[in-house]
Length: 458
Ligand code: GDG
Image (cartoon, rainbow, N blue to C red):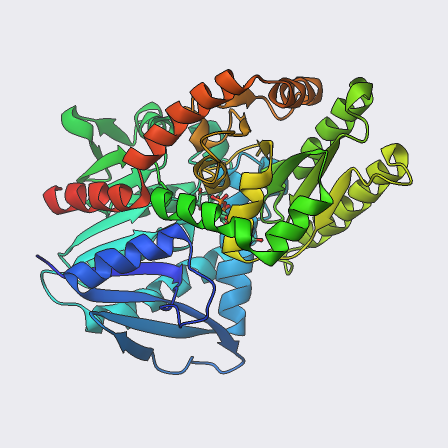
């Protein structure tokens, strides 16, 4: 079996005893690396004012070598905050209005990808299989090919891929499309994203879709596919069950006694539809007086990307909105919205999902959305809750037992909350059973194996 080399913007180092358990993606990649032996390379998260970052820091644990590179402050500003998070992220989430193009940032993105390639190449062996992750590193294969590398290289995009009309508003769309053609396998989350990509190639006359999922563009033939990412379903269900004894979960349970709990969990990001969701909750309470004082909505929202102005602004907006709604509909003994603006431990999170009668997952656009899957996995089979899920999350294409909503339709989402709260046990069990069966079969290990199987065969 060939050695595996994973490259991603950030690297998850192995857990030390006492650390919070890692998320499913890290667990699956570490398992694949451990089995095949390999390297995980990425940015250390550190930056300095020096012109040239320090040499790669290498750490070996078992069969895996972690190769961490620092970046310069300018690199982080231009490549990470500038182009990746202020151009590619909004464009891939259909937010043309939020994309900010700067020549410096665009150049920085390609420069840092070249830098990654130069740091990675000396570590590689001829038959290594390379798996590159996500929008930060699209041009990496082109840079490696330029250096003469012939290895199999696969790319997986964790976020959505937009239709050509959206993508082509980006000045460097051509370089980005060309960059993808240097991979042997380009994987998306859903059939919809793949169709946007392949359709864009064909419609713009820069490529062709051939039989067997093959695509050609810019003189190269490669494979396109979709690989919906999963979670570590069985392990997560187990955490949730065990979390009943966790002190924080027990306290939370006590504090919502007699009320239905609704839960929302998202990084603070405009793609997650948090403000529309708060509106929908307010509308639900106002239009269902019977539920006054009978529901608690817990929104857990760790801060993210606070260096990007839109995120900093959003932090204020959401906090103000939660305060305003509580002021308008709360009573002396009822705080309708509990808003937590920081991260909580994974086992506690699993326990809270299990307590919640409704999982409210309403992104405006999302590659997959793992929270939706975690919520389902965490439920008690005897008394499962209801997943209210945006039709614009990749997960909606799999989780057919959810109540699907259009998150822009505030009244429609409010009606789905009401329907979920009032849903009889039998219907809840039937819907949950269907989703859980799917998640057990399509877990993150299968996702990883499917992608690597196709990359090996590509
Ligand atoms: C990108 C794509 C795609 C959240 N708050 C806490 C916490 N979390 C964990 C959740 C979940 C993860 O973070 C979030 O994953 P999502 O999939 O929901 O969203 P993104 O971060 O935007 O991820 C997305 C994903 O990549 C994978 O391909 O699904 O579409 O945007 O696991 O549980 N975890 C803990 N405390 C928190 O407060 N411990």
